[in-house]
Image 1 (cartoon, one colour):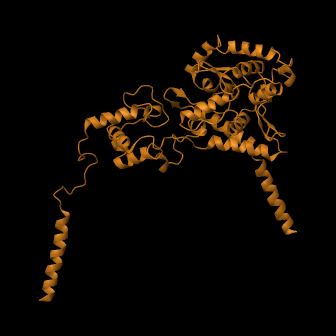
Image 2 (image 1 turned 90 degrees about the vertical axis):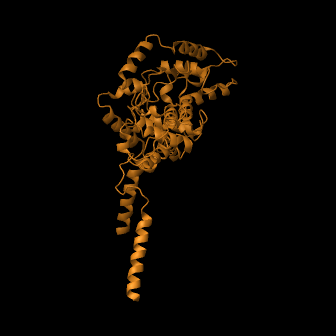
Image 3 (image 1 turned 30 degrees about the vertical axis):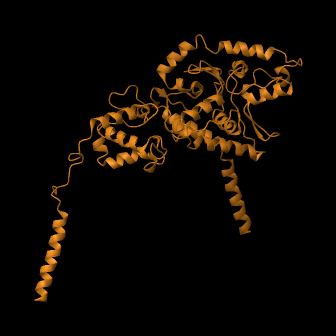
Length: 275
Length: 131
């Protein structure tokens, strides 16, 4: 009798701690940022540094009057509407499209991996005998801009399903990556975006990670063009003298999965414009 | 007779050991830096260049430093350094590996990660200690 009671107690405790995962992480992040930025409303986090940097925001609002990403949206619309050589189109792969950005990233149980939008787009192309697109620069940014623009207002809702432990493992891997120091400069993502968010590196205010994923792809003035989230990941890794990993490789997809979960409840607002 | 000899020889040993300890320097404890040898201003200037260099120390990324433009504010301003680090070796250690003292430090371990050479760190220390 005593053994059964003890076993039940242990199971109950471990069940609770096993569930204590993504949602607790998300609330911990939100609590941390709320304490750091008490006057910033939650929905404003989608604007990143411009939610916490009043001067940067003024400049950004001026830029948004003639958004530099507009030509990319138009080019992306043309891509979406143009039939493939076999007569089919993106519409056939994505009947809900083009407002589909909020469906990604998600855990793909069949493939046992995190599925992202760029990956899904290339799967569509390859299934229809078309050449796949590169993941950092080039035309993928056009179609992503179009899809992002059409998806504005959709709410981020990343799920870590509990019927597949590999999904939680991917989330945990993304989280571990986020908190691991790397590179010659020895920084983790958290060093800048949690520990020192709101402070400045030279003139640049460090943005919080809640809201990080909602406004991609981004026209970055530094790039002079629109680029993808994974391009930014590799750039950040380069900046800290760490090895940039493969765009749409497992590490960056797991990181995207973790980061996107943190933005659950926020509205998509891509494409974005940044310094 | 032997007792007297022992006493004298003991006294002689004690005296010689004490005298051996005297090197002619003042016995009073030195004020930090006050008796330190003058550092070559050229070394200090080199140290400043390394500290300000964006691909080297890049200290302005996080620290306010005298005339440096647009400093970051992640770390404390670099001033009153002799008061904050009376022991120059501790300042050097902090630059070499700040995570030794604070594992959560956001500062780059310039020595441990070989971002700067030992010589460059020596020169930076001479510069920073003048602030």
